Amino acid sequence: MTTALPTNIPDYLAQLRQSLAGADPALVQDALYDAEEYLRSELAENLDKSEAEVIAAVASSYGAPEEVADIYRDTEVKVQTALRAPPPRPRRSLAGRFFGVAADPRAYAALFYMVLSLATGLFYFVWVAVGTSLSAGLSMLIIGIPFLVLFLGSIRMLSLLEGRIVEVMLGERMPRRPLYGNRGRPLMERVKDMFLDPRTWSTVVYFLAMLPLGIVYFALASSLVAISLTLILAPLALLPGVHFSLWIFGIDVPAQAPWLLPLLTVAGVALLFATLHLARGIGRLHGLFAKHLLVKSAQYT
Picture 1 (cartoon, helix red, strand yellow):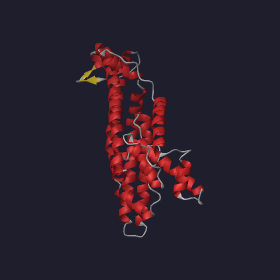
Picture 2: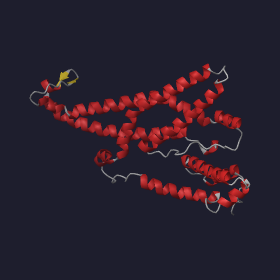
Picture 3: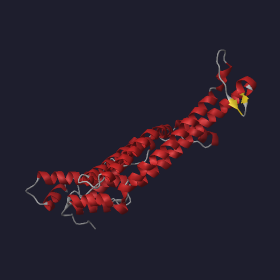
Picture 4: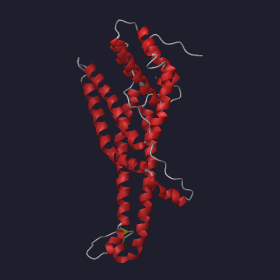
């Protein structure tokens, strides 16, 4: 049975949200934002018509909520299919699966994200720490509340930026539009909603957590890659004019046990591929972590 066409924008968005039940929360956020933008722009261009008349008029072009939901679902499938990197050729052997990670671009992107996260984590942490301190310090002054509102608004914009980084590098679908908000409500009610929205504070928690996570990610990525390359290049120590010391368990390998150098190269190659596997796994887990804290789920919508 077809649902009756809504007569106002909040009801239209509510029906659209209901029609998108079960879809990715990031997709739902994008669809709600786009629909509200379109409907309010049409309403602004037709001031002589009521809200119900405008919605009825645009239903034939933009679509009823159920139709818009179907369009977004179909478009999402097409876009994800086009953007998704070709899957690596399936390998049955253990060695094939282990070394096949070299053909997965997501592993390299995740490794780069681990290195980049030190800089982004430091920036997010400082932004939250300074913003929180200034908000608390100015709370007794008249500009305290407006400053806090601007600070929380900047947090939402930064979460959108982080979401784009996560989606591009880690492959987790994140919102491409700002968080949907009912702009038909009074300003103070919208500010109240922002304070009561769990995603506002979960985003703050995510940004604070990014500094320790960034330190761990950077340390793992840089140290494992450095050790791998050192072991791989160890046989160069036998070249004339090359001064290279590699101590393992108190033994200077190039000077005292040069026969170990080929084995160290093999170990370095194995460690490098293991590092790619680790980076890909961390990337998947971090993508889910970011999705859980940065994206507004249906139960809070």
